[in-house]
Length: 219
Image 1 (cartoon, helix red, strand yellow):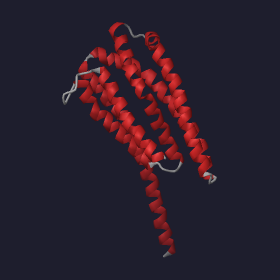
Image 2 (tube, helix red, strand yellow; image 1 turned 90 degrees about the vertical axis):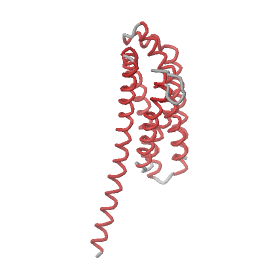
Image 3 (cartoon, helix red, strand yellow; image 1 turned 60 degrees about the vertical axis):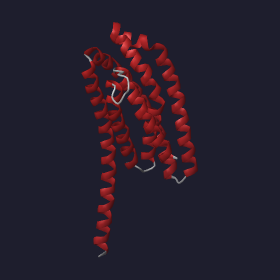
Image 4 (cartoon, rainbow, N blue to C red; image 1 turned 135 degrees about the horizontal axis):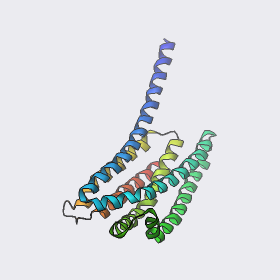
C-alpha cells in the first residue's frame, strides 16, 4: 500500500510539474501569436504600414533580449537566496532587480527616443515609412518600462518555484493586446482610427495591465 501511495504522490507531482511548464510554454506561444496577429491587423491597414512595422522588429527584439538577460541574471541570484532559506534577502534582491531594470530601461528608452530617426535610417527606412516607424516606436517605448517589469517579474516568479502564474499572466497580456488592437487600429466602438499607432497603443495598454498583475503577485 505504501508503495502505491508513493507512486501516486510521485505521479501527482509529475503532473503538477508538467502542467506548470505547459502553461509557461503556452504563455510564450501566446506572446508570439499576439505579435503575429498584430502583423495581420496592420497588413489590412496598408502595405506601407506593414513595411514600417517590419523595420521595428530588430529594435523590438533587441530590447526584449536585453530585458530577458536582466531577468535571467536576477532570477539566478534570487533562486539561490530562496534555496538557502534567506527569504528576506530574496525579497530585497527582487526589489533591487526591479530598480536596476527600471534604471536600465530609462537610459535605453531615452537613448532610443533621441536617435530613433538615425536608427531606422541605418536600417534602411526612408520617406513616409521612416516617419511611420519612428511614430510607432515613440508610442511603443512608453510601454517598455511596464513590459520590462512584467518580463523580469515572470523570471523572478519562476525562480521562486511558481511556473504557473507567469504563463497565465503572459496569456492574459497577449489576449488583451489582441483584443485591444482592432479597437485602436481600425477605430471600433467610437475610437478614432489610428492605424499603426493604434497597434502601439494596444501594446502599451496590455502591458500596463500585465505590469500591475505581476507587481501584485510578486509582492
